[in-house]
Image (cartoon, rainbow, N blue to C red):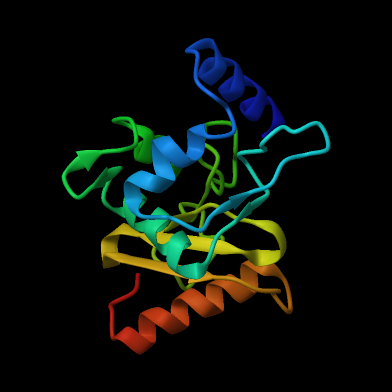
Length: 168
């Protein structure tokens, strides 16, 4: 993740753009996220793979952007192929639980959740789970008693059941 942050910063600054304002201009403002706080490390570096403070509502917007293949209100926000990249298992993960920067359920890490689910996982079980087959995004913030995966499985499966959606 830190290598990704360094690479992204080089690309953004190489185009003459301000690194610290880039996420807000390129993503947050475009999908209506107004109150995000991006913290920096002690050197002033914005760490884009963590240190984001968003409300559940704003994480929902982020999840919907992925559910809708990177398009928001008819405008392409994420590059073509990005959602496939993050939601497809990498060839180097024999358990098929990790995609391009996101966790994926292809290997059944969440046994009671559809296999097409994928999610960015945050500190202490902060998760935004995207389930394309159910047209569903579930945001879960807070500690995860009993382990993050087991708890996330139960939360998402519970939402699916409460909404009367078919799981599988």
